[in-house]
Image (cartoon, rainbow, N blue to C red; front, side, top):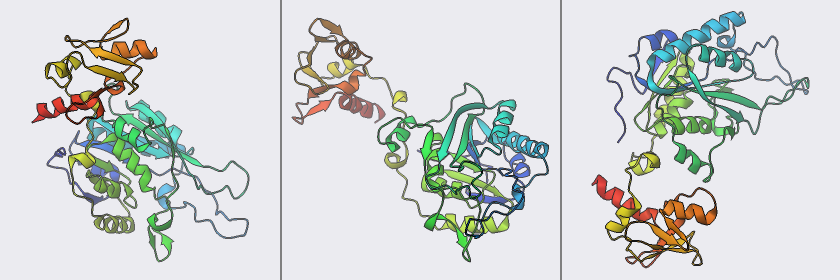
Length: 366
């Protein structure tokens, strides 16, 4: 079941105002996850033009302009400190930036006591080219993922992220196109927000680092991508945004979303490593596998083992646990639950023995 948020949190709302002032008014240690897309301080000094003399719609908003690096650093320290105050001790923070600011942000993060877990590179499949031809095309941005307290427990949904990556461990380089087409919010033909992030990017952030019912805070809410994705994934969200036009567009966007009804099967993926321990001997005691039955390694009829009455198995000269014997066969560490199969007398099919362990776990929860 989804978790219950702090009763004094203004969940699922966009709060107008300065993010530091708003966060300092929120309850301490009440937020599960923060995603921050702060001003990058791009330091653009002049307009950009393409070779055909068409104008480049670059980031020249007033909110991205700071008079000095010292001013930007002071701003960064202030909002990161406010985030630290509201973040639960088990919470994590994601912050995205470019080469203009991310190294300064990272240093201040560490100075404030955050512990960086990963840096993730968002590789843009369709980046804006360098029109002047004086530098490499800037085709990526960097996300820093940090926990509030080094060594504290935190949420990382490893197995769902692996599933999103077609069964392979999710890497720290994410190949995702920039926000364009129908996803890009526009008003009268113009972009609503100059730095709108793609929903696919936020999907990975929120799916990896939170659970259904958790509260996700975005102190620079902008066009509301964080809230839109959080709503789809049955997380609560809080957005803070000073710009009224951005707030209106974000609210309209989020109101239009109708997520699928919540179910544990669809949205909650418990860590298999935290499930109740079931020894293989318990499978034998219950009669789900009988002494004398044959197990097959990787479903290969040529490699088999006999089940002993004490819960061990024997293959040739090797006798031991399902893991020990599997390791001896393949010459490498082995998770026996996933490698051994057995003929199931009930169904007549050959099944992975881990399926029998799931039967007992389900009975333990009833």
